[in-house]
Image (cartoon, rainbow, N blue to C red; front, side):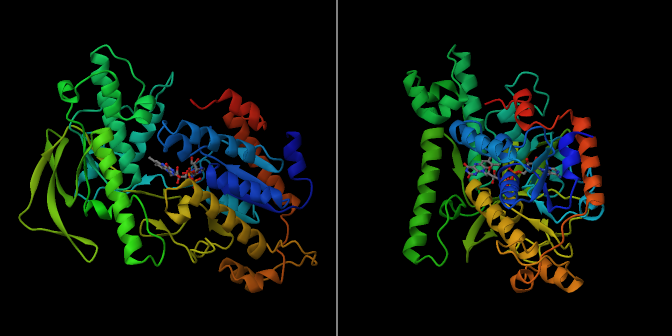
Length: 455
Ligand SMILES: Cc1cc2nc3c(=O)[nH]c(=O)nc-3n(C[C@H](O)[C@H](O)[C@H](O)COP(=O)(O)OP(=O)(O)OC[C@H]3O[C@@H](n4cnc5c(N)ncnc54)[C@H](O)[C@@H]3O)c2cc1C
């Protein structure tokens, strides 16, 4: 066995297993390492960057580079074991972590990778046949220019329809129009990069090349949203906002949509919901939309207002939810948490959600802060590792239950026992097997150098 894995199993220690190595997983790992806790970061992909690499569109070049560097620094820390190309639930069952390894805690930092289904009956039968979901579409956009790319491939057709309204859907419509205008310019012998065109805007790019937009014959895509533009979840008022503050936020939303229309030539149709697919020859070739009225903040469908909208490409971008992992209880689309504050998963003592998987908010800062906060609570309240030097006592069942609820009073009274070497041997054996399977040699920097991200 490799030296660092022998060292891992050599003496009792606190060990936390973390699913996912991106913003929240790497932040949790470093919070553990800071307290002398060994962190095992299990990541399904070869690189750990999650939505930073595969979600955030690649024109966010500076932000991406900054986040990559931070994740790298966190995962290269002493006491952090990175296990790439290993999917919990497939390559390793969750019970291996909770039962066989008996780790001190398990942190779910696995984000939100399942697209919320388009609420149109039978729609999912047409995925890849006219209908595309946001996560794989953005993944394609971020990677398709890489040499050897072998992921999903999408043809961006003009006059596409996007169903959405949130921040990610704004990125989707921009991707479509950037691709369309780049193609149209290329046909005129003008080469532009989509990243540069995003920074400048489509309208300004065309102006720079002295091109009348209408002369290109590009219609561009249309974003359909179920409520009013001023309701779009693009900006959020703070809690207990006054009516004036709410009106200000609504103004920000309208301004953002205005920029989308003028700078990126996207059409936005609010107060429309898709109600049924239009299918021809086994393909989805459009959607029937119904008009809505907004009553008490809700979109209420207006009977008799249906309209047919045909499109060769329909992208559904109505939100992402956590992927199901066998063994994790769910409540509706989400994991079943006993407490949203502690992140404790119902009926699974020692298992907690951190970051996007818990907050449901697609936001880097929120994911990071939530991960830091929840991991800190787990270390202090669940593991009982405060900075004082109380004697170590093994927990009984009552404490176990109290800690699962995140009960700080019970938690502060006692420390959880370290993981014994025989269990740690099982942990080290599994890591060794996974490292061998992936070709990882235990050196994070060397691995990253050999598996570089595109930018
Ligand atoms: C189109 C788009 C645009 C965005 N733009 C912005 C923006 O401008 N600003 C902003 O702040 N935020 C933005 N976000 C959101 C932001 O990128 C995410 O909220 C944040 O990066 C989430 O971090 P996370 O670590 O919690 O989750 P993720 O980044 O999703 O990381 C989860 C990790 O877990 C791994 N994983 C999943 N399941 C398993 C498993 N079973 N076993 C092992 N590993 C697993 C994944 O591979 C991944 O690496 C955007 C998101 C999208 C989709």
